[in-house]
Length: 151
Picture 1 (cartoon, helix red, strand yellow):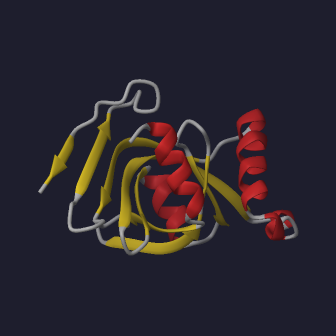
Picture 2 (picture 1 turned 90 degrees about the vertical axis):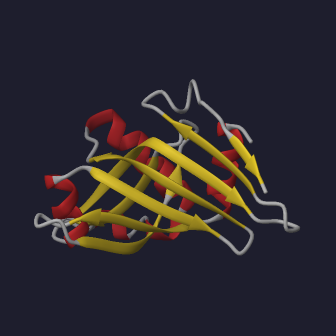
């Protein structure tokens, strides 16, 4: 399992559960459509007045879970609202993944968040032989540290 394999895995699943915390520390989660870049950045859109947008503006720590019956990914990272060229690049990535949302992109309160990974765990439970791969660090996409467990 490599970071490129993770990108491929993310591209199979268009939706993820996104989690963050409220100003008083309570959990908040939502299902969001996500697109992934080759650098394992996740991008999603939301209205600027949503709870997740307000929460992420105050505390950029973010988590996602996605996957299916036999494999999942847990993803912890930091979120931001890109602007300028970065926004254009990420918005294009998102709209390539969700072309039906081009009309939504014209909403005046729509914003895009990008998450950059700090920690990722891939867990597969195929054929009774679990495999878990873990990456961490700010340079995760370029210099992953991998560990593998089998039971």
